[in-house]
Image (cartoon, rainbow, N blue to C red; front, side, top):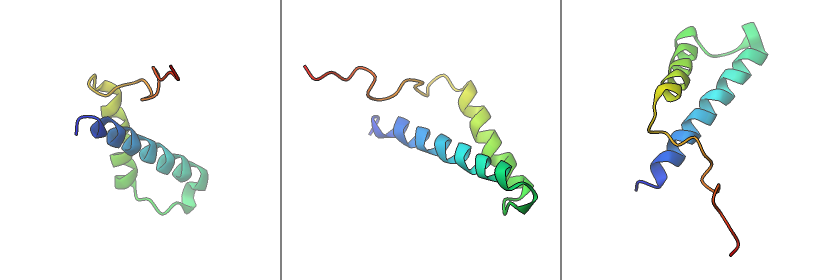
Length: 65
C-alpha cells in the first residue's frame, strides 16, 4: 500500500487548501471555527516541512511507449 499513501496525503492537502480558500472567500460568513482553520493551516505547514511527501505528480514519467 505504499503507492496509495502519497495519493491520500496529496488528497488531504488539496482538501485543506480548498477549505481554506472557501473560508477566505466567505470571510465572516464562514462556518469554520478558528480552531478548524488553525488545524487546516497546521496540516499545510507540516506538509511543507515533510521531506517524505513526493512533490511530483504521479504521472510525471508516463509514456505511451
